[in-house]
Image (tube, rainbow, N blue to C red; front, side):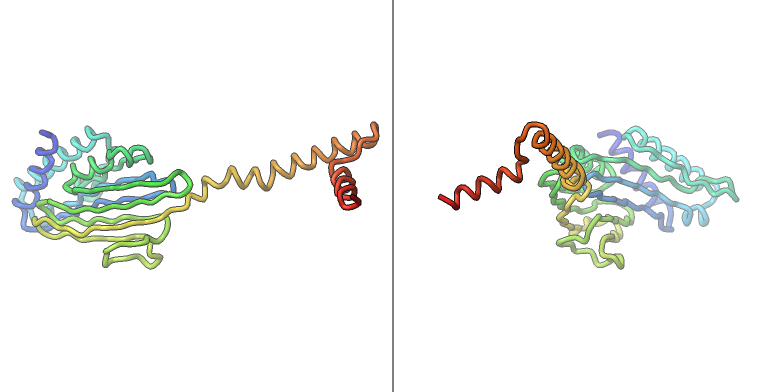
Length: 241
């Protein structure tokens, strides 16, 4: 809880000290097996351009503190450095969640740390799944939230949609509570079908070939009819009766 409070204090510091606008993004990538990649981006380059030396020092300290918190939360982080000025201006934090992590609420918990109250529901099995997210932000800063899906969603309320219909974006402005982030998608995990396809197209025909050769060998040396001939003889006897 102290870390969460510390993180929110840093975010409030960014918005209250500087008159500019920091770039803050939460990007989710949903895969077919309902695992998720979470990227959290903080970019304060626009603030640094208008800040004095004291403000720059406070801003860099705030960035370092927030990046350190993200590492404590299990994120891998990448500092964003302006090579020309040799100055840090932000960072990107990344974390992966498998299907069980999402189901157990670990993704929702980390989103809450970032200022988003999210209710995530995952149903189905590894082959057919449904993913539903309902969320709202309570944050002292502007935030952009995007989610990239493996297929087009069944339902959503985003007004910013990519050309292929798979990436949705919401822009949250100001410090007020913002409701209305909603997306639902039905997913067929085609990768889960690969073992069945291999069995159907490769293993099963191979077994049939082996069995036919065995039966043909038996017929040749022992006078035993192959299964196909036995079937024909059996049907002939039935119709004769």
